[in-house]
Length: 102
Image 1 (tube, one colour):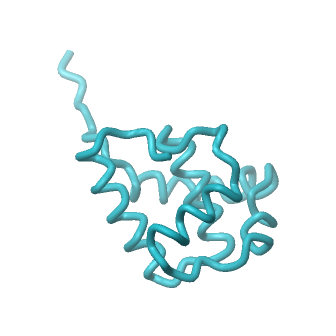
Image 2 (image 1 turned 180 degrees about the vertical axis):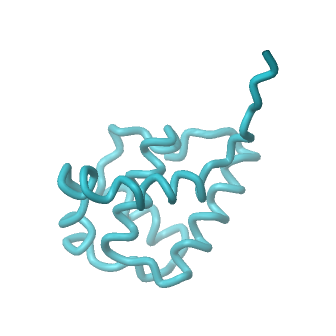
């Protein structure tokens, strides 16, 4: 489900697990999903339900209820919480920053 090569996938999975282990639930999980989608690591076509089940199965950690997360996966959260989502994009980014050498 993650759209990166195998080497980067392991780095990303470690970051996701670390984030979830810090007691991230509900809204923070929604922010993580938005960040991962905006980074292009998750296909937009993956259903939220399939994603939650995959997270629970992979990590075996409590990420909250589907309903508790669904409540935040909307345009209002995306609009008002973009600074938090951007911060998570920085955290989850696995691509090296390339400098312009012009």
